[in-house]
Length: 386
Image (cartoon, rainbow, N blue to C red):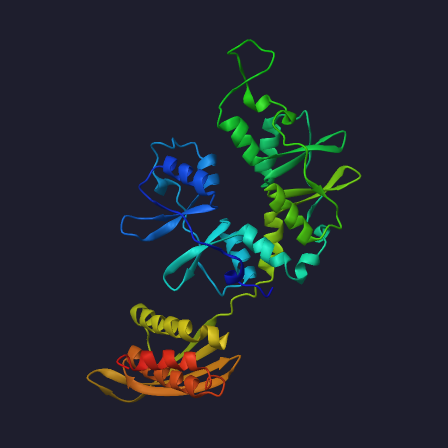
């Protein structure tokens, strides 16, 4: 993946206040057709997102329920984040529309469709759909009840079920279809029955609400062409057929998962302690780890991965009851090794002295000598008045 969020995201957004009602959201969705709405509080602080789907799937009264009831916090991404990272965040959060920020400014949103489209425009788009599709999908005969369909969707954690007649594909039912046709109108009137007589909704056969005809593709279809079909028909799944029989299904999640796997694991900086005649209580350890976390935030991206070995021992005489402590640091990273030491009275102070000296060694290293942006940030931290 070479594309980044800045190449594919949708600029601009519509916003709603968290204390507005859900009905105000529905009117905005109808007017602008945005993927989600950005939710803000009365002070203008961003709180999360609300989607049309979440409102549709809820049983709340749209005219009396506040937006914050269905607001979800979404992971924030930046313009430079990779599509694989975005896909990973979407899978983990189960939110398919993520806010895009430049510093503290919200620019817009990146959707699963944006990621899908951007990814297939690269070489990966030549991949055949059979390589990522869910093979041997669960299927049901057209006369099976909606209750059976719903039970299958819940037990298997799937969102779509191809419907067949004698093994041949005739339709498809999704959880959205069931919500739209069954749970929103709580009862339906059965054709042929007396006017006003109610029919048990979960006993309706699948063929009564299934979508037909089904948009299908062949196993050898390229992902680029599959994405084009999804976009053209505004659908989130495609059924793969062979001689009219469903042999697989591909959804947007099926596309996101292999993309997410391309994201390299975040390599973190670790710390190990070795103490001799030095006792560290929980408060002191908390201060030390706080300093190290700040250090990791500054250098984790530059040095990628490494382990900081902290050696502490008592040294010399004591002062006002405090023992003189010697602290030696060895920092082994992918970019080389760095060493420093310090002495002082008190665990936190001694560690901070040694850590400051270690930071100086890192800045002087050949790897970072020409990184002007990095050096400017370092100087601003060390000399705030500059």
